[in-house]
Image (cartoon, rainbow, N blue to C red; front, top):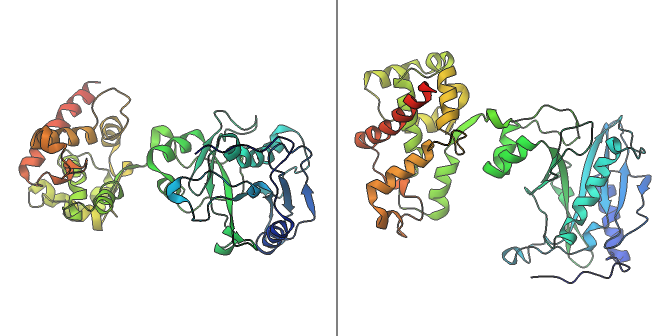
Length: 378
């Protein structure tokens, strides 16, 4: 639903009582502030930035907007009434940051705060946890960071929401600048997957030259059970959750049989490898679930196996050839026929209903070996 913007000479403002509540919340949860970057021109909302300076407890600057939440964002109708309409933003900077500089290499985090604070107004949209905002180019000449991830501030759960005197809520969100590869990964796999790639080491403090947690050509995770078991749970499908591992187990079995696993994998799981190669173990679904934590990583394979996984077991195959997940789906279409494949029974997840047996393995083995031969020729 479109919203009429305020006249450019009448910015949206908090009431005095609301502003006092925001002020107290910032002091209580983020720290005392002595300095404020006051906004001189405010065409829509008046955004001041409170500067909490480094101290012994927090050796970094914390910048918090005050005023952005005066605007009620246009949240989706299904989320209305959940207190997501108002937001203030937070950014953390190293203690040696030239906070008073107007040079773009120093000023860009402040500009970022204001730009994203006004995004919901300019685009009649909203921002919330897990959202990302692309910048299309690096923020400044001294960094390749070019996008923003929106998360909860790391100052305790109570810092995330300020309840104002009238009962309305204002959400506080942390802005985390990210690289293009990280942005692409987040868009393809989601915020939770990206955070997993940071391995719980995501710092709230901006580091213009930090190492990327993921590179486009080097995605660590090949496949994981959440992408499939999650569908079973969300859609309440009439199959056992173990079927979410079917195609992963087929690929892993084939890779073991073709000696494409790395030395560390073969040593760590020597009994399983021997059982697969001898034909005593043809069902690796529980092994993936229990021993591999439901994931296939590129590092599990040897050099050739890793390169082939990038070539074939990839959702966006750069070689223009059908990828493994596509072939899994194609086999389901052939197995069930078009009418049943597209029926409400399967809810676009027909591949999960293909019986897990030797016929299924052999059918998928034909796909894999066809493209493996092409891969080796390349």
